[in-house]
Amino acid sequence: MTNYRGRLAPSPTGLLHRGHARTFWTAQERARSQNGALVLRNEDLDAARCRPEFVSAMFEDLRWAGLHWDEGPDCGGNRGPYSQSQRRELYVAAFERLRAGGCIYTCTCSRQDVLRALQAPHVPDDEPIYPGTCRPEPRVEGRVSREDVLRLSLDPRPSSLKTNWRFQVPDGEIVSFTDGRCGPQQFVSGKDFGDFIVWRHDDVPSYQLAVVVDDAAMGITEVVRGEDLLRSTARQLLLYRALGQAPPRFYHCPLLSDEAGVRLAKRHNALSLRALRAKGVKPEELWQKPSV
Image (cartoon, rainbow, N blue to C red):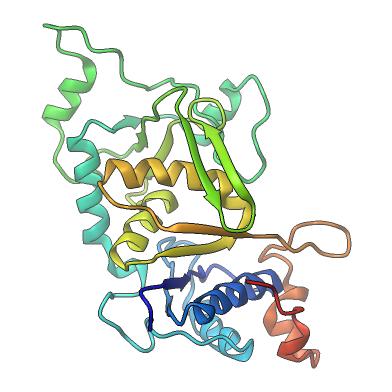
């Protein structure tokens, strides 16, 4: 085994489809090509949408598709637990570090508030660029700001105030990285993406924070996922830096679409792995073996 560590990170909010299988197969092949380890992480933070039947279906469908992993909720390992719902202490510790560093602030704006305030359309399926409504005022020496009062009065737990917490991005900074498939990438913070949520008003860490904390704690050396998350990589690189963690490498896979050209999603039940298997489709028919 080498020190390469990849991961599969499905979310049990619905049935997995062919697009998931293609991306996960690529992750498996890249781990195999490096004689490395592959970790399965159950991203079940969204209690309102995650259901036990989707968890069991996830394991069954991944195995049917020919996927194998070395660590996970079903087989253990020394970097567990491997379900996000059991990793809250790690997320709270990261939250507290971000707040102690002055990286985050409270925000009472709803998503609809943000959308109404925008002057330009945002990228579909991406977090809209925050207009700065609740952003802290610049500090003036000798004056106690509203943010200082809140910080001094709040309980240290993120759940103490039923609002969102946002990461304040450094406006105008170019965040760049080289993707393993897509090549050189760069995004301008404050322009291509804005202050983003790290802790939600329902007392749950955001996707951005949770995956950074988990990938760092699990020693993941390369993240393989869909190319719709390229912009999220820029956000996450800022989190890695703020938390004092070295980021992994990234490899973003092309997305699959249906016959109408619509990107596959979990609502496409007819194209789920479960439905395809019921139709007699063989695992080897799901894809042409992707290059690594």
